[in-house]
Length: 387
Image 1 (tube, rainbow, N blue to C red):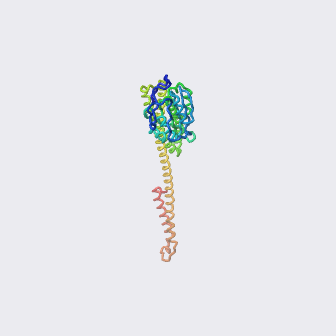
Image 2 (image 1 turned 135 degrees about the horizontal axis):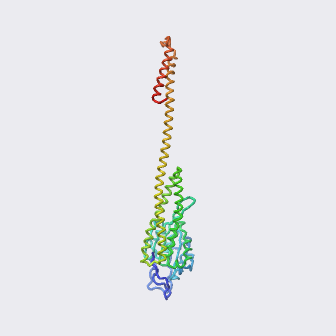
Image 3 (image 1 turned 120 degrees about the vertical axis):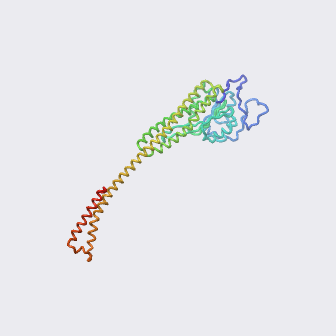
């Protein structure tokens, strides 16, 4: 976390301790100029439409609400013991470059904040702390989790937030801090902890929403809903993203807590950060449990689907067996009836050279032959369970 400095004004009216370094692009003067330091010339006129809120604070109270970044820089230079809190949403390149020139931000951190799609991390560049957070919120209508990205630059007298996404609602964080000027007077690190707390608190509704989805999925699995496999897969992907957002936070917060003694962190902020760390650990454990439960539900669903398929195959096999039995019966009777038909057809041709036609016992013999053949076939088919 940034090193805390004594913010009480010196007898000369200047703030002791940290002095904002000269931008790398500017040539340092031979001697310190009298009066306020002139503003560096921006590379391009920034578009201020992405500036959500910009304020200068003194002793935890807002004393100015500049409309542009250039005016914010000027008002901050007029307040040696003040603090600037600048909130941006998807800023442009010129805006970030003007901030980098004014506050000496590292070019790698600026590039990360401009491009987004970063993993949660905490890095230090000189006296500036760069923090990347992944916020989340649960959307009730589509029943899915939406993730946002937040980049925070923390310096001795400034805090800059670069938001990519709808979450978190930093305006609520700012209002809450402005209602507690004694906490905000502790400096930019107090605002950082409030942002961390807001991001972590935003995970709670997501956990509740996911828990409801899990309950619904379990019901659908045992109901045999064919679409449940797709829903399990989609929720599993969201839990992977959720893990990527929460798991690195545990290490980041422990790294901040390890620097309590080194940077002389206020005791109130120490308690604040420990509480945030506890919530993150609890959320991370819940997310890990969700992933494990989804894996088990997917296994159970696969087993139930397999059992259902086996039952259907067994039913089809039984139906096929019954159909085969019917075919056997039909075929057996067809063969039995075919024998007398064959004999009758042969002797129905009435050829003159057929000796049986003039035989006295020809008719009884033909009847007896047909009866013997039919009875023989019936006995054979009966023994083979075709009839």
